[in-house]
Length: 346
Image (cartoon, rainbow, N blue to C red; front, side, top):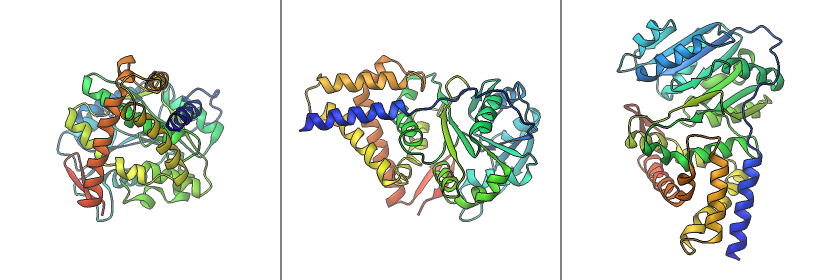
């Protein structure tokens, strides 16, 4: 019986994989748009200059680039100004009830003048065609277009995001439309105002999932893509503790925010993944099947290799440990930390 459940969960994994969608050019751009790029930035002096340089090289030029300096403790403001962006500086902490990123995005929107809004995290690395390709998808599908970047690594510990990355990808892309990817989101000003913008999700740490669901609820189509060749990022370059803090701030809330059906599918798949190494001999058929599945899945998601797929039990146990840590911080202490800021999630 246990073997049947493992095989069923393995098949669910392939269903996830077949439903993944990669960003691609959907044709030539027919409209003339004013693109407002809005970048929320807290302590991003190391990433911001590179992003702003890449935005200058876009084949479809943005109308304006707005950097919202979210009460940074470094030179984020200066980097933005020296690279030609319009910088909006918030010198105080967010008002009560607001999460910092949402407050920064909202202030960027209030100062923007374009008819299309493109929200980008400060650590993304778009190719020169990125805005043009995003616009081609927008013209085809309308509504909200979001994109999860390809994961770029420089150090070994960064590979530990293996299960987190897969989980983020399949929960947003596969089987049922749900949520959106926060690192890169494009939406018209009209639709953004129609749903109430980030003001409606002001207290949400996992704001991208809630904002995507808000759009769906309001009848605005949501299409989530994987960045592939068009956009990359290096999520946590400052060390292992940076990675742990980053994932612990939203992992448990992300899981709890999923719909019941998607949570059930994910639970069945993870049961097979866990059981294949925890309840069986070290090397068994199901271990080999899941290793192969992970290898196929992750080749286009980031700088993963065959070794990552072979040692997936280590990655999975690291994921479980961080999820437990995240749950303790969220539900027991009711606060998480990110970039030197304590966030109340009570």
